[in-house]
Amino acid sequence: MAVPLAVVALLTAACGGDGDSDAPTPAASSPAAVDLLGSANPARGEPVKIGMISDGKYPASDTSVEGRVADATAKWINERRGGLGGRPIQLVKCESLGDPSKSTDCGNRMVEEDVAAVVFGGPAFPEAAWQPLHDADIPTFFYGVSAEKLLGDPENTFVLGDPIFAVVGMPLGLAQENKAKKVTAMVINIPAAVGIYENQAPPLYDAAGIELQLVAIPPDQADMTPQAQRIATDGTGVVFVVGGETFCTAAFNALNSVGYSGLTASITQCLGDATRTAVPGSFLKDMTIGAQAPLGTDDPSYKLFSAVATTYGKDIDLGSGVAIGMFTSMASLREAVEGISPSDLTPTGITAAVKKMPEKDLPGAGGVQFRCNGKANPKLPAVCVRGGLTTLLDGKGMPTTYKPLGQSPIED
Image 1 (cartoon, helix red, strand yellow):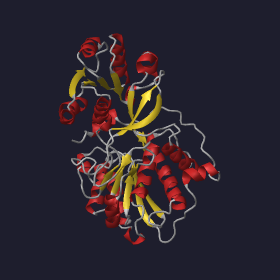
Image 2 (image 1 turned 180 degrees about the horizontal axis):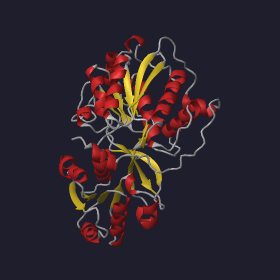
Image 3 (image 1 turned 90 degrees about the vertical axis):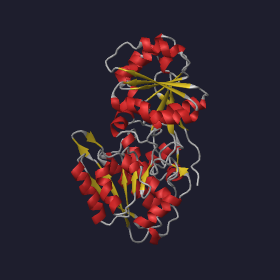
Image 4 (image 1 turned 180 degrees about the vertical axis):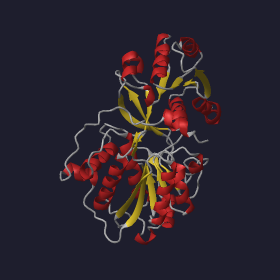
């Protein structure tokens, strides 16, 4: 039931939202910073090697902030969180530059360096780096990944996000929360996007007793009034709009023009200055949007990320979903092995500890919980999270507060 990588890139990349990320962070020596970062609790003894693989900067993308965040988070863990099992983290970093062969080289290098575990952000070619690590029984932690081979691994791969939440689970959870009986997905008619609602989504909606209607619309159709008119009168309780900004603007305006009065939900790719200018604020108000992290808010998890980034790092964009994603990966490793014996800081020992962890707050995720015992989604045993984060838009089309949706306890 994994969502194809191309669809994840289209629909869920950069889901962090557009909130103001300039909130001040207290100085490291202030009482407020101690409350956020924790009291001094330095790690001691022989370092434990932890790998970090990032695409880094190359012509098509720049995720070099991941390395700076990994450094800052490791320093915080070593100084304030007692390291891993009391031992300090020694980072071993490698940049794959968005190249599959270099990704394989990075994986092989981690094996050669004898690291105990490897953390990733959202690599372009995850399987290439993962395969040599998996063959060597080294546990891996991913902030976001959609490769079916990785998601289906029950052994030592841990994915810190629900890969189907933003495009399938979020509108379903919204319908359940509001007792809606029918969801209509207005989807840009490209195979990768439409396929989700033809194949992966129906079993989930059937199991929940909620009708799912797919309305596939050509990418170049500017006037979607005919489709909107049908939706406004067919009992749809939730409309979920999926596409790029131009497509979504046309869909929103069509729904508004016909007086659709149900709930509306969408993805962050639908929102930009052009959308906010072209679509009435009265329609955007209270629209539900999926998100990766509560960026730019006073949420405690975001304030902790900000404090770590400003106290221990430099040149870190606090509004970057890529940046907070690496914080989540690094900090989650620490939380997952809390209480581990120093002698168990081996690939086998870390894997065992992570699988035995209780359910905890996912760092940097606004109250979303994680547990890596393979039961968050039994069909995708590497996944550690059930559900995700959502926000409502205000009258200007901007995110307000964030809350988890689609969460339920992950059983033993």
